[in-house]
Image 1 (tube, rainbow, N blue to C red):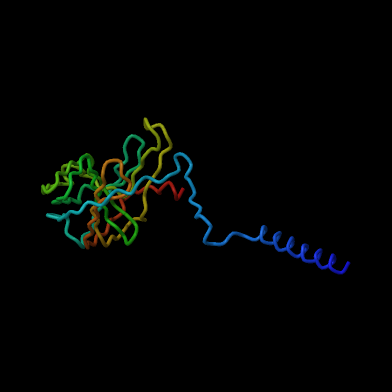
Image 2: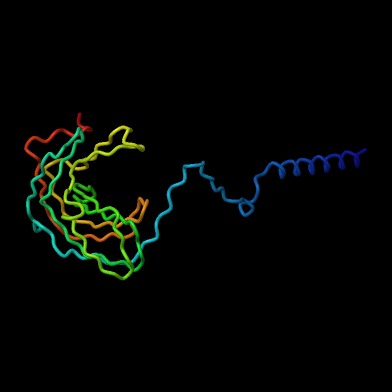
Length: 209
């Protein structure tokens, strides 16, 4: 009788240990990392591969330290504040072909892009220095502009004016984008200081209404 009780106690202990082992978590070395699969359409666009190259400013008018007068250049119901008084001539050379590039010229106040323009549809051949003029390809620099979401120009308008006016900028950036790219493949920055004066009858931005 005493031996039967002992065997029963041992069996109960073994069952208890087996149950606890079954309930305990797996060893960390056996865990597989969880990699979330993005839903259709939620993945970010691929980051373009940078292209080595150089950008040289051949001419910049007016000179650094100047005050530039902005004007209200709104038209056909589109709100715009711009200037044609800033002229930039660039020499650009890349180590790889880049057809249909966009070159963005931006004047920054620290992290804020206060005034900008774009040269669209520029084809850059590898190893060939190309001279580009904002006067010919993008004569207006914008401190405020509007764009439309969606195709056909039928969506809601978005007003862009990052800086209050007047704005004082402290650097100039030349940013080169590939076709359909949201991230520049080459960025060159230059020290430059400008004061962009508000137009005499500047309208309040949409965000301030």
